[in-house]
Length: 502
Picture 1 (cartoon, rainbow, N blue to C red):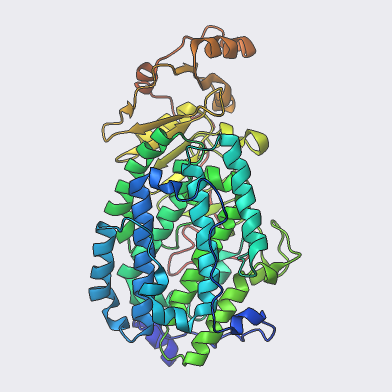
Picture 2: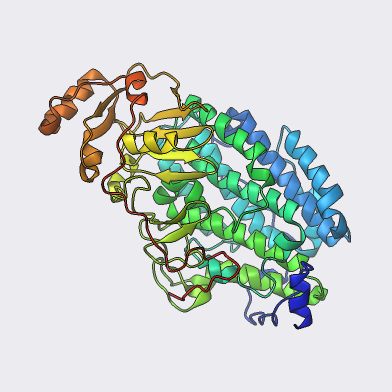
């Protein structure tokens, strides 16, 4: 065995192959030593995340944790990352600050050394923050929120040169650099915290998008509990959490934002791995960090389009069918992707009955189930209810109704009981073949809406309106259409897996 391979086998984070060359035509701003401070786009909704105090404080703590770890990495305290640093970060996560800190005051050495990187991070973090502010606002109508998120993204694209590409990136390629996995192997507990942050920063969008403030608070009660009790301390993830895995509704509606946020999180991972790789000179680290930024910059991919494979690796912008807001994962085909603990699946089909999900302008009609750390779109209310009943612990169900602006948000407890009560909601369930489940399973907002639905679907005219209590006590048959997808290998993340190229 060569020395680098031995180091990796021992978990000592040595580079496993020669470092790739740093491009010679990097943007000029990467050589600047001073930072160009950026701030929020003007808006009455700014800081409305504090309508959800628990979420706001958890996001404040994320900023502290990132800054503490980066500062210790570059000031000779890397040996304490899994002990003293982890304990300091964990204390902050359990006692989050009331207001968002200035990360530069916590990681001043890191900022001075890698100011060009901080520019990219800060600009994307502002997009993150303002998007959440819009979604949490009580001042804007749903239609105004849609328009303002689009305006925020245009502001992000046009405001500075520090823009991360909105194209889906081949995540397998990005995670196969010579230094990849150095950080997660050497500092698994702190990496668990980082990926827990990424989980929260992705999962929060489906909890907020299209929901009232009361629904958002209820949803975050469940999500925040999962975040603090499980997601922050996981060290067994095969890959960083992806936005489309934890917020598929948001990722379908705003694929450019979902891709931007995934690419931002991958940039964090690349930097973490470079800093954790031993044996690199300071010049090599600086060069590889600049190259990592270059790989994910919007300017690097100018003229390229989502869904296309311009070239192997860096310029592979394909995405799974039905999910333009997600890059290709390890072993994935355009039809199937692998989710640990769930196996192979299609993002375009219902995970409960295998029937095609609504898309385009009808995409909002798909219910979602959030459970055990993931979120999944399904085809009908019955699919959502029965899928949630199969999960351990609490699950969040978002059930569209006849009114796109009045979805139901239901939470199942450990006994599978659904609440809170929704006295105006009525359900139709005349179970038949799942090829038509999007017709014979439906939720509406009133008796008048129920009668209108039956008039539009006369084959179900004998259907009786079910209350939430009556509907939640039912259990459907095993879907007659379900097919378990089979991928090219059993598990592409297994150590001995040989994954064919696509």
